[in-house]
Length: 579
Image (cartoon, rainbow, N blue to C red; front, side, top):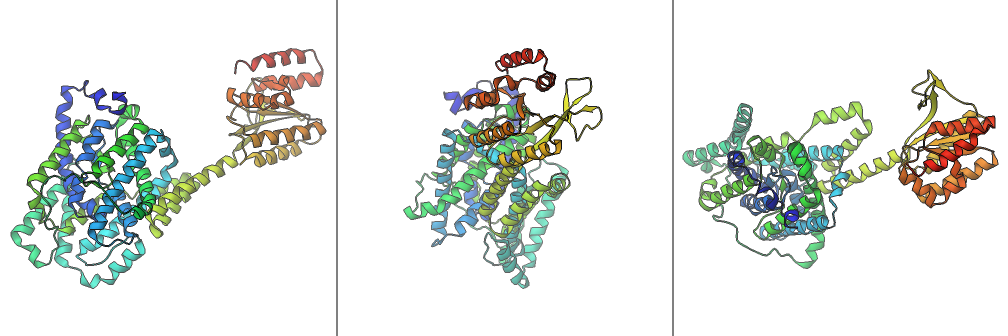
């Protein structure tokens, strides 16, 4: 039980000394990276920069104890920070203190929801967010995040929000007020970060850019020339405080919390699968990940952390730096803690434009044009889904984009299953194999009095009319000589009650037209449904076959009226017990 809910008790006793060098290197690297990145992401969320550092403490330690991936880097992330900003920005809040209180309580709310999902074993929910939805949402969110930081890069005093049209309107309206020195520092920071990343992915490029800018501001007194700086940052570790909001505000936070809980879980699972390697994918347990993330958010909220999850860029650096286990996360949390205790006075000279530069470089990689082009060339329906999610997120809002994206993907799924592939089969000459006559026209035997039909999908209420329509269409093509319809049911894994009633109607129609229905290749669960509903008896147990060739032999023998019919029927009766 202890190992189940606290995986650290499983991997720590097996910890190897050879892991330590990689874990220390990765932990120190991520700890240094988390400082500028956490401060920048807190700025996206509309919070004072120090809250990004708070988010890098307790959540990391909790996940190291409870998480099933030893390589995920937990903390503030850009997209979740934008969801916090857009969600809370839509509420009528009285000031920054209430805003902070709401953001921290939101982390508590997210933690409770994720814990509930984890105990209810709802990790499968991650499967409902398809890659086109993630791609469209992420690209649109990256553009919104980038636009939300342009005013910091330009040194403008404008109000920002989560709508791209407002960001564009307000930025364009103040272009005549661009502060050239601020812009120069920001562009210089971008150049430094990009150059250092090209030289080596292991270099803490963002931290180096931060250090250079702090030194420049301090020694050249650039703050006196109008360059906006972070200002005073509270020194010391966050104190324990119970998150609290007014009762009526809880319901206002519920849709934001649901969105964050779902989104942050999907982000963590996707990153763990993508970056963790084969060994990590085998040990990853989605339900335990929900419990780990939920507990991290819950406990973190009591120490002034806002909503956290895994970060893609941080996790990539963590893996490349040699991280093997959760020890690396513990070391990075220790580094952040030491900085909070002793070095926060240094960061007061950090320019806002440099934080904006860090964000712009980070979100640029989130815009995946190649994936969109690939979908356009190969899967037009999924490309449309990506574009719909992208445009809704960009034009309407963050939460609306992700929710409607999921709904559209489910609609697409239902549409696909409502019109599954149906094939008319023919027997390959001199074999017992059957193929689609439209794909294998040559060397295929067809029979004027027999229709062989394969239905590739579950048979249920959404596609039963389509099945019936295609069945009658192919019957009409056969003409009046048709006497047998063989349904190849190898690909049918489920039949619901609505489809069962439809098949009864088909049987009644066939009896009037003197056509026999035979079923071949039905798998065990489908046969259970046929027998449980009584449809097997209505079709005739002797007309259920393991293989399509047996059903065809039945038809040929019945037509010839040979004694073989009895033998084949008896084989078919017995065969249903072994499928």
